[in-house]
Length: 335
Image 1 (cartoon, rainbow, N blue to C red):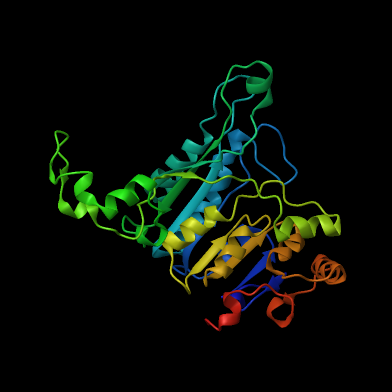
Image 2: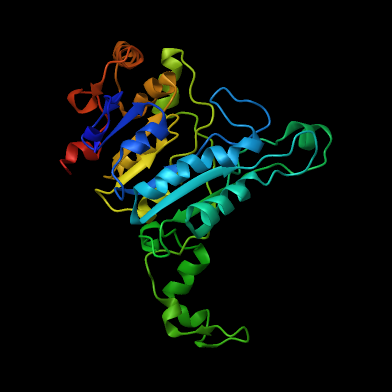
């Protein structure tokens, strides 16, 4: 897949590569019907300008739709786009912006996507915000939910919920151990027919579309290595368990996963660990260079510094040639 591009990656493995480049230009070079999943978190449409770049709310939907049109062309017929969008307020008033819902309607009505399912990421560790309406004036509850739109090119995208089952609750485990002590097969007043199969152990419970994942990373290799090098980590990272859920749910080993707003390349790192091929695009070279730290396993400080500086200077690195690369699918000779 990398051979389609007119530039070298910042770094690569046997399974994927990250490019410091404009995502629109890179998407244009990809073959149509070639990508199984685009998993990304665009810069949110916030009123306050962030250092990682974000569009004004009144321009945001049109701006993001340009990416959506290309993604639609590049997805396989059973491929998916998963968009993580944070909430926002209108300027100067305690009233919510509807930009994330306008994105959904535009992508479905104008581009042609189907809403396979709406997900909501609950981050219990999120600090109270916005400060003006929550902390100071005490007018609103803290904003701790992101909307996640699972969009598909057709109405029948590839998906397997059995790949993301969650652990049974303690009570359900007791029921499975002795079903007759907890219920009798019968039709309930609600109309649900509770059969004897209700007590079957399916290996886990079907997850809800509310994903409770704390974003409280504090001691990862990425953050500790950034601290060692005295460089800034990306300020808007999502936790690895978020792309992990959707990559397992919507793809198989060997499928192509793309992140068009890579940031610290969490998606690429997770895809690598799950035996998926991956491509990541990010405009800021400092974020690209720092993201390589996710792929390294106990390098020395000098090795960290050398790798970071080489990427900053524009050298293209093949990580599998290094002796201190994190054990991953690229060493399993999947390709």
